[in-house]
Image (cartoon, rainbow, N blue to C red; front, top):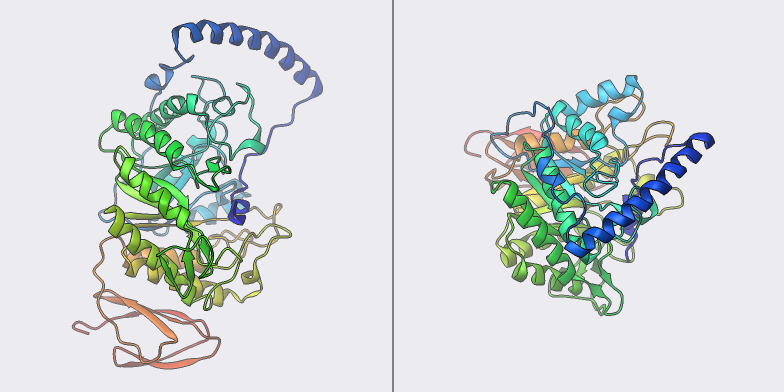
Length: 475
């Protein structure tokens, strides 16, 4: 299923051991394995999972979080395998300052995407790497979110004490759904200042090949167990799902649905899964999806700017059908299947101004349709891993904010959640605009200069320029 999985390569690097140490570890591990099997057999008789009570005794992380923002920033990012803080000092320092310049929503997964296995053995927690990411979010003023994915190997058929990062996208087995829920509760106890959690990621491991559709029944059972576990820790915790990828096909495809437009048609199997979750979930504080403006064939219709209308159409459909605030855990307005070597990403050949203009247009669609939270999937990589970082939020050359990060920060400053929008008149359809009472942002969607009037005021925009302007009272 789906090329966007390639965006998610994010497992931590495995440590390298000396041969002598490895042999000693193997010897000790063999003894431990025997004892573990004995314990498992003994507990199997009583129906008790080893370490089941350990989650209730997890101690909170000593961290001073920023104050809850008066208004939810709405716009933000997901940290992946690397962050600027992992880089050399001359990059990490400025990089952290760039992130801290304006409070954004910041999201981190509990395993993979920069975090090690949080529970390598039942009831034995290792939160060191996750602690570091949560501290980073606190230190840079982020409004924290945690994604409850992925699962330790022993929950999905692997060996306790071992992590095979090739299996990162495997889902926990049904008999371990309750174990995963307990892990979620342990995470909530570890980080009591984190109030918002997304359950799982893109239905990983939950594709029903036999019926060629998403296994919404299994996902919803997993979700409900996690929901109950988190609410038992603190009823004020906010929980959302189903975090399903909203794929798009060309009109007329067999997977087409009623949610469609010139940009294409949403896969009907996605709508079916969302409907099942909506009707059978225990409860939810928000609904989560992710997706790209490009169709399944990689094309953007009618063009890269008009294709952003998909984000608005899907947001409005979700608000109407679920009655919940809509979160985009990932949004991909650029036609990129992958930025890895050999991957297809035509946008890498564009000037930065064009890429930023496309992202700005997508943010306008999301704001205009009432999206509650929108997260940019950051692809940061240190200099020794990638030469340049064209789609990153922070430069891996000097740690300065990129134009995309500044754009997200401007939207967080001027269009946080609940900001009333006001009409704005623009004299040319090639220039997009969105406004609130005090501020308007306009985007030139063409490769040529545009002389236009915005609310009666003349302005000349450079090719693909994004410009913020003050609005006079009463305009």
